[in-house]
Image (cartoon, rainbow, N blue to C red; front, side, top):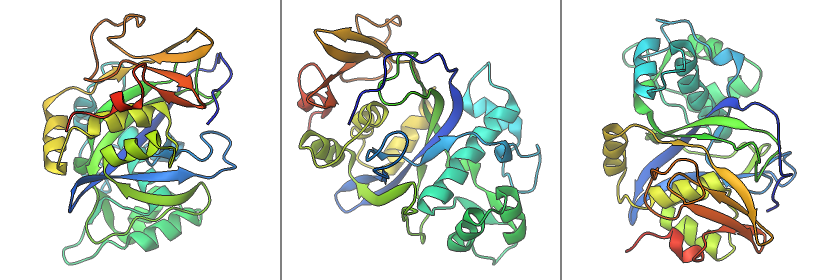
Length: 296
Protein backbone atom coordinates (compact mmCIF):
# COMPACT_ATOMS: atom_id res chain seq x y z
CA UNK A 1 0.00 0.00 0.00
CA UNK A 2 1.24 3.48 -0.84
CA UNK A 3 0.06 6.89 0.30
CA UNK A 4 -0.97 9.22 -2.52
CA UNK A 5 0.54 12.63 -3.37
CA UNK A 6 -0.42 15.22 -0.74
CA UNK A 7 -2.94 17.41 -2.64
CA UNK A 8 -5.58 17.28 -5.36
CA UNK A 9 -7.59 20.20 -6.74
CA UNK A 10 -9.99 17.87 -8.54
CA UNK A 11 -13.63 18.21 -7.41
CA UNK A 12 -15.06 14.97 -6.04
CA UNK A 13 -16.92 12.75 -8.51
CA UNK A 14 -20.27 11.24 -7.54
CA UNK A 15 -19.93 7.50 -6.97
CA UNK A 16 -21.72 4.63 -5.27
CA UNK A 17 -20.64 1.47 -3.48
CA UNK A 18 -22.67 -1.42 -2.12
CA UNK A 19 -21.77 -3.47 0.95
CA UNK A 20 -23.23 -6.90 0.18
CA UNK A 21 -24.02 -9.07 3.20
CA UNK A 22 -25.02 -12.62 4.01
CA UNK A 23 -25.51 -14.66 7.18
CA UNK A 24 -22.97 -17.43 7.64
CA UNK A 25 -22.66 -20.26 10.16
CA UNK A 26 -20.49 -18.08 12.41
CA UNK A 27 -22.36 -14.82 11.85
CA UNK A 28 -22.66 -12.07 9.28
CA UNK A 29 -20.27 -11.97 6.32
CA UNK A 30 -19.40 -9.16 3.93
CA UNK A 31 -18.27 -9.40 0.31
CA UNK A 32 -14.84 -7.99 -0.56
CA UNK A 33 -13.23 -7.92 -4.01
CA UNK A 34 -9.50 -7.61 -4.56
CA UNK A 35 -8.48 -4.93 -7.04
CA UNK A 36 -6.06 -5.94 -9.81
CA UNK A 37 -2.39 -5.42 -8.91
CA UNK A 38 -1.97 -3.23 -12.00
CA UNK A 39 -5.04 -1.08 -11.38
CA UNK A 40 -4.46 2.66 -11.75
CA UNK A 41 -5.69 3.23 -8.18
CA UNK A 42 -6.21 1.07 -5.10
CA UNK A 43 -4.07 -1.67 -6.68
CA UNK A 44 -4.24 -4.94 -4.76
CA UNK A 45 -6.65 -3.53 -2.18
CA UNK A 46 -9.78 -5.40 -1.04
CA UNK A 47 -12.81 -3.20 -1.60
CA UNK A 48 -16.61 -3.25 -1.74
CA UNK A 49 -18.12 -3.29 -5.24
CA UNK A 50 -18.58 0.25 -6.52
CA UNK A 51 -17.61 2.93 -8.97
CA UNK A 52 -18.33 6.38 -10.31
CA UNK A 53 -21.71 7.58 -11.52
CA UNK A 54 -22.19 7.09 -15.27
CA UNK A 55 -24.56 8.81 -17.66
CA UNK A 56 -26.43 5.55 -18.22
CA UNK A 57 -27.39 5.47 -14.53
CA UNK A 58 -29.89 8.31 -15.01
CA UNK A 59 -33.15 6.44 -15.52
CA UNK A 60 -36.39 8.20 -16.42
CA UNK A 61 -38.58 8.83 -13.39
CA UNK A 62 -41.38 6.28 -13.26
CA UNK A 63 -39.60 3.91 -15.64
CA UNK A 64 -40.73 0.31 -15.50
CA UNK A 65 -37.26 -0.89 -14.48
CA UNK A 66 -37.26 1.04 -11.17
CA UNK A 67 -39.34 -0.15 -8.22
CA UNK A 68 -39.51 3.29 -6.56
CA UNK A 69 -39.90 6.86 -7.88
CA UNK A 70 -37.04 9.35 -7.81
CA UNK A 71 -38.67 11.38 -5.02
CA UNK A 72 -38.79 8.36 -2.69
CA UNK A 73 -35.15 7.49 -3.35
CA UNK A 74 -34.10 11.08 -2.70
CA UNK A 75 -35.99 11.07 0.59
CA UNK A 76 -34.33 7.83 1.65
CA UNK A 77 -30.87 9.14 0.73
CA UNK A 78 -31.51 12.21 2.87
CA UNK A 79 -29.26 14.71 1.10
CA UNK A 80 -30.88 18.13 0.79
CA UNK A 81 -28.45 19.29 -1.91
CA UNK A 82 -28.85 16.17 -4.10
CA UNK A 83 -31.59 16.26 -6.72
CA UNK A 84 -34.06 13.36 -6.97
CA UNK A 85 -32.64 12.46 -10.39
CA UNK A 86 -29.10 12.19 -9.01
CA UNK A 87 -30.27 10.32 -5.91
CA UNK A 88 -31.99 7.73 -8.09
CA UNK A 89 -28.92 7.48 -10.33
CA UNK A 90 -26.76 6.70 -7.28
CA UNK A 91 -29.00 3.74 -6.41
CA UNK A 92 -28.81 2.55 -10.01
CA UNK A 93 -25.02 2.96 -10.05
CA UNK A 94 -24.66 0.82 -6.92
CA UNK A 95 -26.79 -1.93 -8.45
CA UNK A 96 -25.03 -1.75 -11.81
CA UNK A 97 -21.59 -1.94 -10.19
CA UNK A 98 -22.65 -4.96 -8.15
CA UNK A 99 -23.62 -6.73 -11.37
CA UNK A 100 -20.50 -5.66 -13.26
CA UNK A 101 -17.94 -6.37 -10.55
CA UNK A 102 -19.26 -9.45 -8.75
CA UNK A 103 -22.18 -10.74 -10.83
CA UNK A 104 -24.94 -10.16 -8.28
CA UNK A 105 -28.16 -8.62 -9.57
CA UNK A 106 -30.74 -7.25 -7.15
CA UNK A 107 -33.75 -7.25 -9.46
CA UNK A 108 -37.16 -8.83 -9.83
CA UNK A 109 -39.01 -10.07 -12.93
CA UNK A 110 -41.78 -7.89 -14.30
CA UNK A 111 -43.73 -11.01 -15.25
CA UNK A 112 -44.92 -13.54 -12.68
CA UNK A 113 -43.10 -16.86 -12.88
CA UNK A 114 -40.11 -15.44 -14.70
CA UNK A 115 -36.65 -15.88 -13.19
CA UNK A 116 -33.65 -13.55 -12.80
CA UNK A 117 -30.64 -14.72 -14.83
CA UNK A 118 -27.81 -12.66 -13.34
CA UNK A 119 -25.23 -14.44 -15.48
CA UNK A 120 -26.98 -13.49 -18.70
CA UNK A 121 -27.49 -9.92 -17.53
CA UNK A 122 -23.81 -9.56 -16.62
CA UNK A 123 -22.70 -11.02 -19.95
CA UNK A 124 -24.88 -8.54 -21.83
CA UNK A 125 -23.69 -5.60 -19.72
CA UNK A 126 -20.03 -6.49 -20.11
CA UNK A 127 -20.62 -7.00 -23.83
CA UNK A 128 -21.51 -3.33 -24.20
CA UNK A 129 -25.31 -3.40 -23.89
CA UNK A 130 -26.63 -0.43 -21.90
CA UNK A 131 -27.94 -1.26 -18.43
CA UNK A 132 -31.43 0.02 -19.27
CA UNK A 133 -31.42 -2.13 -22.41
CA UNK A 134 -30.35 -5.20 -20.43
CA UNK A 135 -33.24 -4.71 -18.00
CA UNK A 136 -35.65 -4.08 -20.86
CA UNK A 137 -34.51 -7.16 -22.79
CA UNK A 138 -34.79 -9.44 -19.75
CA UNK A 139 -37.96 -7.73 -18.44
CA UNK A 140 -36.44 -6.95 -15.03
CA UNK A 141 -37.07 -4.27 -12.44
CA UNK A 142 -34.28 -3.10 -10.11
CA UNK A 143 -34.86 -3.67 -6.39
CA UNK A 144 -33.84 -0.29 -5.02
CA UNK A 145 -35.79 -1.28 -1.89
CA UNK A 146 -33.05 -3.80 -1.19
CA UNK A 147 -30.52 -0.98 -0.76
CA UNK A 148 -30.28 1.07 2.43
CA UNK A 149 -28.02 4.13 2.68
CA UNK A 150 -25.21 3.49 5.16
CA UNK A 151 -22.69 6.35 4.92
CA UNK A 152 -21.37 9.08 2.66
CA UNK A 153 -17.62 9.59 2.21
CA UNK A 154 -16.00 12.56 0.47
CA UNK A 155 -12.32 12.18 -0.37
CA UNK A 156 -10.26 14.95 1.26
CA UNK A 157 -8.41 17.58 -0.75
CA UNK A 158 -5.27 15.86 0.49
CA UNK A 159 -6.11 12.26 -0.55
CA UNK A 160 -4.25 9.33 0.95
CA UNK A 161 -4.84 6.49 -1.51
CA UNK A 162 -5.49 8.04 -4.91
CA UNK A 163 -5.02 11.30 -6.77
CA UNK A 164 -8.74 11.18 -7.66
CA UNK A 165 -11.47 12.44 -5.38
CA UNK A 166 -14.90 10.86 -4.94
CA UNK A 167 -18.18 11.64 -3.21
CA UNK A 168 -19.21 8.06 -2.46
CA UNK A 169 -22.52 6.89 -1.06
CA UNK A 170 -22.21 3.50 0.61
CA UNK A 171 -25.32 1.32 0.63
CA UNK A 172 -25.88 -1.95 2.49
CA UNK A 173 -27.87 -4.85 1.04
CA UNK A 174 -28.53 -8.51 1.67
CA UNK A 175 -26.97 -10.55 -1.17
CA UNK A 176 -29.64 -12.13 -3.40
CA UNK A 177 -30.20 -15.82 -2.71
CA UNK A 178 -29.48 -18.31 -5.46
CA UNK A 179 -26.79 -16.15 -7.06
CA UNK A 180 -23.03 -16.70 -6.82
CA UNK A 181 -20.63 -13.78 -6.48
CA UNK A 182 -17.54 -13.88 -8.66
CA UNK A 183 -14.90 -11.29 -9.54
CA UNK A 184 -14.56 -10.20 -13.18
CA UNK A 185 -10.87 -11.18 -13.65
CA UNK A 186 -10.22 -7.71 -15.05
CA UNK A 187 -10.70 -4.97 -12.49
CA UNK A 188 -10.95 -7.51 -9.66
CA UNK A 189 -9.11 -10.80 -9.19
CA UNK A 190 -10.47 -12.36 -5.99
CA UNK A 191 -13.85 -12.73 -4.28
CA UNK A 192 -13.92 -13.01 -0.51
CA UNK A 193 -16.90 -13.64 1.76
CA UNK A 194 -15.62 -12.88 5.25
CA UNK A 195 -16.79 -11.79 8.69
CA UNK A 196 -15.96 -8.09 9.22
CA UNK A 197 -13.95 -8.85 12.35
CA UNK A 198 -11.98 -11.56 10.55
CA UNK A 199 -11.23 -9.14 7.71
CA UNK A 200 -9.80 -6.66 10.22
CA UNK A 201 -7.77 -9.42 11.88
CA UNK A 202 -6.37 -10.47 8.51
CA UNK A 203 -5.52 -6.85 7.75
CA UNK A 204 -3.79 -6.63 11.12
CA UNK A 205 -1.81 -9.79 10.31
CA UNK A 206 -0.86 -8.61 6.82
CA UNK A 207 -2.90 -11.26 4.97
CA UNK A 208 -5.05 -8.72 3.10
CA UNK A 209 -4.72 -5.02 2.29
CA UNK A 210 -7.49 -2.48 2.94
CA UNK A 211 -8.02 1.23 2.31
CA UNK A 212 -9.19 3.62 5.06
CA UNK A 213 -12.90 3.72 4.03
CA UNK A 214 -13.04 -0.08 4.11
CA UNK A 215 -11.10 -0.24 7.37
CA UNK A 216 -13.41 2.17 9.16
CA UNK A 217 -16.56 0.68 7.59
CA UNK A 218 -15.57 -2.85 8.62
CA UNK A 219 -14.99 -1.49 12.11
CA UNK A 220 -18.68 -0.54 12.24
CA UNK A 221 -19.97 -3.65 10.47
CA UNK A 222 -18.14 -5.83 13.01
CA UNK A 223 -20.55 -4.62 15.68
CA UNK A 224 -23.42 -6.61 14.15
CA UNK A 225 -23.98 -10.37 14.31
CA UNK A 226 -26.66 -10.65 11.63
CA UNK A 227 -27.79 -9.00 8.43
CA UNK A 228 -31.20 -8.30 9.96
CA UNK A 229 -29.66 -6.41 12.88
CA UNK A 230 -27.48 -4.32 10.61
CA UNK A 231 -30.33 -3.50 8.23
CA UNK A 232 -32.51 -2.49 11.16
CA UNK A 233 -29.75 -0.13 12.32
CA UNK A 234 -29.47 1.34 8.82
CA UNK A 235 -33.20 2.06 8.79
CA UNK A 236 -33.08 3.76 12.18
CA UNK A 237 -30.52 6.47 11.52
CA UNK A 238 -29.44 9.03 8.98
CA UNK A 239 -26.27 8.06 7.06
CA UNK A 240 -23.31 9.96 8.52
CA UNK A 241 -21.33 12.30 6.29
CA UNK A 242 -17.64 11.50 6.59
CA UNK A 243 -15.16 14.04 5.27
CA UNK A 244 -11.72 12.82 6.36
CA UNK A 245 -9.12 15.49 7.07
CA UNK A 246 -5.45 14.65 6.49
CA UNK A 247 -2.33 16.13 8.02
CA UNK A 248 1.27 15.13 8.71
CA UNK A 249 2.42 14.33 12.22
CA UNK A 250 5.92 13.22 13.21
CA UNK A 251 6.69 12.17 9.66
CA UNK A 252 3.50 10.14 9.19
CA UNK A 253 0.37 10.90 7.18
CA UNK A 254 -2.64 10.99 9.51
CA UNK A 255 -6.30 10.85 8.53
CA UNK A 256 -8.76 12.02 11.16
CA UNK A 257 -12.53 11.66 11.23
CA UNK A 258 -15.44 13.53 12.88
CA UNK A 259 -15.02 13.62 16.64
CA UNK A 260 -11.22 13.68 16.53
CA UNK A 261 -9.55 16.66 18.31
CA UNK A 262 -7.96 17.70 15.01
CA UNK A 263 -11.15 17.39 12.93
CA UNK A 264 -13.34 20.40 12.16
CA UNK A 265 -16.51 18.46 13.11
CA UNK A 266 -16.63 17.81 16.89
CA UNK A 267 -19.41 15.21 16.85
CA UNK A 268 -18.41 11.58 16.23
CA UNK A 269 -19.77 9.80 13.20
CA UNK A 270 -19.40 6.37 14.86
CA UNK A 271 -17.88 4.52 17.86
CA UNK A 272 -14.25 3.46 17.75
CA UNK A 273 -11.02 5.17 16.66
CA UNK A 274 -11.18 8.66 15.11
CA UNK A 275 -7.88 8.63 13.23
CA UNK A 276 -5.57 6.40 11.23
CA UNK A 277 -1.84 6.97 10.74
CA UNK A 278 0.18 5.64 7.81
CA UNK A 279 2.98 3.59 9.39
CA UNK A 280 4.78 0.46 8.27
CA UNK A 281 3.20 0.83 4.80
CA UNK A 282 -0.37 0.64 6.10
CA UNK A 283 -2.95 2.66 8.00
CA UNK A 284 -3.51 1.94 11.68
CA UNK A 285 -5.04 3.65 14.75
CA UNK A 286 -2.87 5.44 17.28
CA UNK A 287 -3.25 2.57 19.73
CA UNK A 288 -2.42 -0.12 17.18
CA UNK A 289 -4.58 -2.30 14.99
CA UNK A 290 -6.24 -3.92 18.01
CA UNK A 291 -8.19 -0.66 18.41
CA UNK A 292 -10.09 -1.49 15.23
CA UNK A 293 -11.69 -4.55 16.79
CA UNK A 294 -14.84 -4.05 18.87
CA UNK A 295 -15.03 -5.90 22.20
CA UNK A 296 -16.06 -9.54 22.01
